[in-house]
Image 1: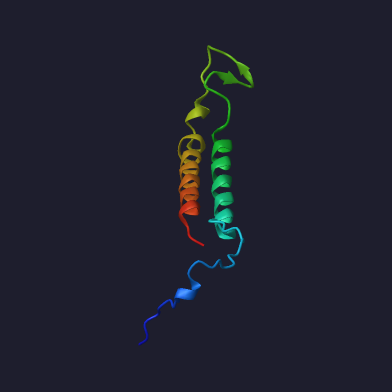
Image 2: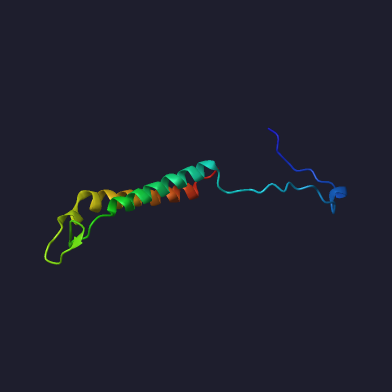
Length: 98
């Protein structure tokens, strides 16, 4: 078993070496792919949450009517769950290493 060591000599002291000027990005292509997937989940979740409000019937505001569609499964359960999943994917995409 050999031990890996860096060999330096006194003659190397004070001399400049070429350093690659290649920019080092923290995120790779997989990170960006996961970020786009997370963003798509968030956007779809907000789109699923859209709809008429409680006092809108046939596109017109009517204070004397009530629209029960604001309590639909799509707007209360599925859309927020999709948004939370999107944010979890975003956190994973940021913390994922190359």
